Amino acid sequence: MKKKFSFKRYIAPLALVGALACQDLEEKPQGFVSTDNFYATIEQGEAALTASMNALWEAWAPGYSYGYGNFIYDDQLLDGDMVIPSDFGGSLWDQHYKALNNVNGVLRAIKRGNFEGIAQDEIDGLEAQARFLRAYNYFALVRLFGDLPLITEDTPDPVISPIRQRTPIADVYELIVSDFQYAVETLPQSWPGAPGKPAKAAAKGLLAKVYLTMATSPLNKTENYAKARDMAADLMDDGTNSLIENVGDVFKPENKYGPEVMWGFNSTSDDPATDAHIWTPEIMDGWGDASIDPTWSDEWLKTPEPRQDAYLILEFDGTPYTEFDEQRPFVRKFTVPYISQDEYENGQTTANLPIIRYADVLLIYAEAANMANGSPTPEAYEAINQVRRRAHNLPINTPDASVDLSGLSKDQFDDAVIQERNVELSFEYDRWFDIIRKRLLVKINTLPHPDYLPNITDDDYLYPIPTYDARILGSQNPGYTSE
Image 1 (cartoon, rainbow, N blue to C red):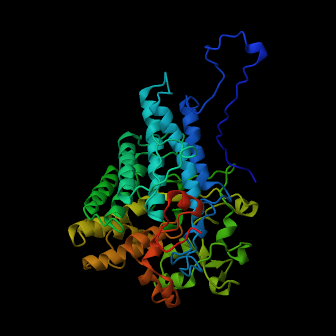
Image 2 (cartoon, rainbow, N blue to C red):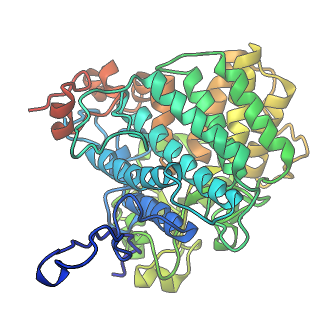
């Protein structure tokens, strides 16, 4: 299996012996490469940023490419019984900090002035990409683990001087917001010839999501609802992105870089993601690793809509899912027909996993506008209704009473938005983050899985700190042990 490009640093040792004894030892050795001077070109810096994403997305690696198991306790995936072990989710901790090591190396080089002779706007563009990625990594980590070791370009080498304290959640968010704000101000509208790189719209979308998350648990700083609304509105108004009109086209290869998908994990034919077989049933020669909880899909399927066939495998070659060996639907988003049959048979999927897309932004706006206003505004209704119309393959901008929401209270509308996020963003690793920020574990398990309820406590809204790091830090999240 072909591996992704990995950017490694080599430090060449110097042996000053015998023949060098009469050399001028004050002469700077031109061939010496150290951690202080390694990054000297934009290409080297961007290679390090590519390596940071590689840490999260390499095929069969413990990040997100084969990462559904890290989100097994949402209500979409099978067998998440809410008995969370004390070593759960540690691979995400490790991979995000590996990514941050690469990102901080680039930011450190910029701060030290390594990029001599390069135009300032190019350096600023590199810094914006790095700060965008740092914000993204910390946004994932702080939601999953709470208080964090906060490592930046100014932090002494944590290997030599281990960090022995965790930074409070609110302070981590200060860095996240600052980094995303810089990215919003500095990133270009697009990167011609490099569509996988983060651009301004992705920074706006993720910053809106950060504000929305800060308005909910655990911070509950409700003043951020207005900030989330306004940032999402700014993105909606600038016209850079839009919904794909046909719901069956959202995940087609020709649409993987827009106009709906604003940024995500990137796969190519020579750099594929983990085999699509993990998402498919035995009847498709699949492995069914990422199995859907049938209680979740049964609830959604009570009201039929075209989006269900677009996002779920409900039949294969005329056989309905009720006659599959597993007797449940599977995930279609990242498999055929959204990759070629040849790719599927060869185990080389070029499907991308979205991290932020325009449907998400519309739903962020709808939720934030309703909460900031105290009731759903006409604009909030229109935002969610555009997503609902597209789900039924109706004209997106034309009101349709058959699917449009109306006449809801603040709480009813909020529930409707969260449910719309549940199905629209399904299996994109987004559901767990909604569950924890809205504190939904008891609510979503009461009817389908009452046997899970004794296993649920407030401690379950954070994953455990990996044992080794918890011992160094001298603290563990409540409800877990570090033994």
